[in-house]
Image 1 (tube, one colour):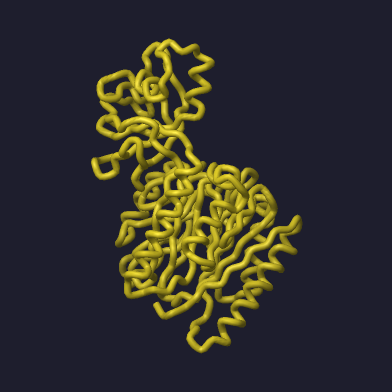
Image 2: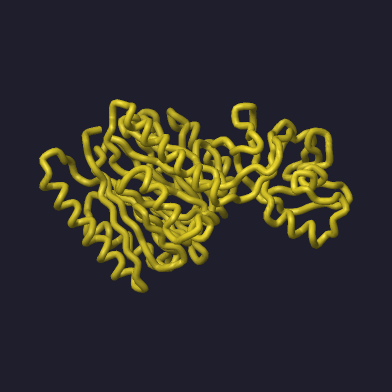
Length: 392
């Protein structure tokens, strides 16, 4: 790609019309400034629109207005309990963020229920994909695996809508159910990393017996006894005290030796964090919010704000280091998808999470949202952040 920069905007207001008008003003001013620069060329073609769920009922009207004022731009996005821009978080308030990119038109394809994936005979090579979806979509994990297999790299990034009133996703139309997003060709340079928001509190164990979502034994020992040992709790803890202890304990699941967590350390990028959703006191069995199989790795964990902040700063610096060591040193724009359980107070102060990203990357055009589940590679994650930068 040629040296091109994205433009972005953000605004909050009780009226979506006022917020959208302000974002459009910011975008148009930046586009005008870009046009005056001799080293910037090419029309703006792809846009992102992330909406606070306060605006979700007006999503069709917002998209119509974007198409009217920026003809020729294809729009993708979703709605969430919060949205983000460079160094800014809008959580549980009416707001929207926009970003527009001057990508070559032949370098990407929008897909949705109305626009299917391009056929192999089309000549377009889908290398990576940005994906938006809803948590209520049946078999969403299987759909992600199928889509991953249709891309050359196998790498997906994105997240699930977290809107409380009307979950939706945008792909030149407003959709519910299924998947939508953008396929990118190999000429679109990007670097993406996963940051974990939880920290292991005990050693990694191997699931030795499992039934669907039930962890029966770990290394041959009852699963419940294992978590009590890691928490330093008595085996005969009263039921109410056990319930309180398990309500703040999660499990980190992974497959294979390459992503085994090191205690007391950090999870690898492929670890999927899931809730403990039930316990059988008689059988000493734990129920978790995912399917589990014998041979998988499991480590008990808790959310840890300081570990999450340090890990976010680490991946952002890794991205900058990779960018500066490669042939393409220009950072055009960025997307950040964070778990709705991470934003705001979890990092200690409003905007702290997004300011951590800005401190590492600089004031690059960036938008994102707080998701009901995060997508990276071909997995659906929880309590993570997915940071993706576009290079050119």
